[in-house]
Image (cartoon, rainbow, N blue to C red; front, side, top):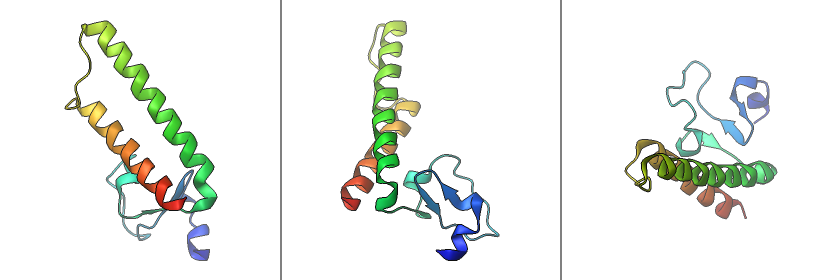
Length: 98
């Protein structure tokens, strides 16, 4: 962990990326579902905030979609599926830390 703290590109707002230094990431912002992501109780406030913001974003986008199309956004929508996956990962992470 001491070596990891020297790598500012591996310190995330909600945890750390354990990807070896010479490797590059191709996951974009999918850290929560990546097996190279780790976190601990010191990040719990940020994780809870992220969970709340994700829930709000999902609700806002689903409302906007329904207003625009007259239909609810289905769970097979690629954007919604990704956010639900993030929401599930956050829930599991927070539960495990608590």
